[in-house]
Length: 243
Length: 70
Image (cartoon, rainbow over all chains, first blue to last red; front, side):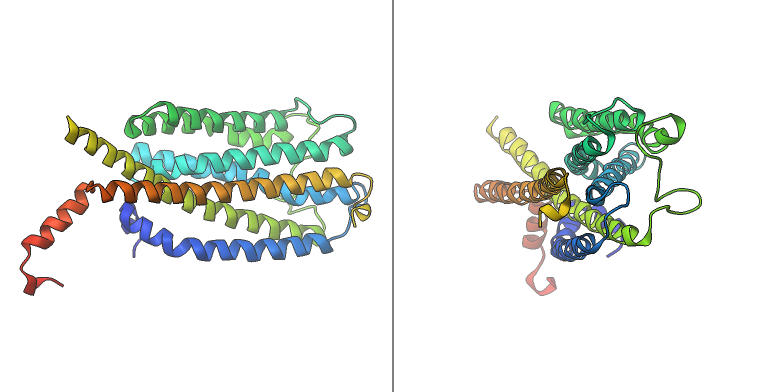
């Protein structure tokens, strides 16, 4: 089966049905391995055991941006190529992205409270831009729910998604452009990671596990969205037959 | 074991609880949503409502002579 074949929703449903159990199994194995590595990792010389929050905060933050990037590519698919599954992919990703962003904000606050002193929140550039990302997700979910016609909703959402992509480089480079309380990048940076291998390995394992979870959930949510649209189409057919 | 996590153990445990809640919540959401959608679709199809492509496939099958069907 070629990639183009998956543009057909029926073929995609069959493909997703076969792939989801394998993805779910892989996610489970990666989480078990990741958590075992986290349990065996050392405490940080400055942060102490609190560094363990980083193993979920950092992957959640990465995935909050990766999910939005997936939505941006899908938005291009809707506007440029009019791919039949592009809006399905974007709409299915939004609640997952919103949850990962909320998780990044919550775990960041829980890490910040003991590490930064008596505060859960600072209006610094990194925290504020991630909060804007969370609000963008909520706004998009609301937009899709407001516009009943999926075609019109798809175009409006795609435009809003593409406008919102301006926030991604702001999030990434906010710690370099402004003087923020949030520490600068320590993994994806020029010159390589500054984290010791004993902490980098569990972080990479947890990031892989979270990424596998994202792809599993996204594929399952896309399958649900296709079914939802079929039900809507059948409902319209039934309404037309009654008239 | 909790004591081994140091003076900020509750912040660490709360973070992992939040992650577990997010992962389990999303998983439950897709599973329950899928179950409900599948049931709704099955109920509609039981009422004789089918998609245009399914109707076309059924019509094609009925018009094709038996000996030429795959």
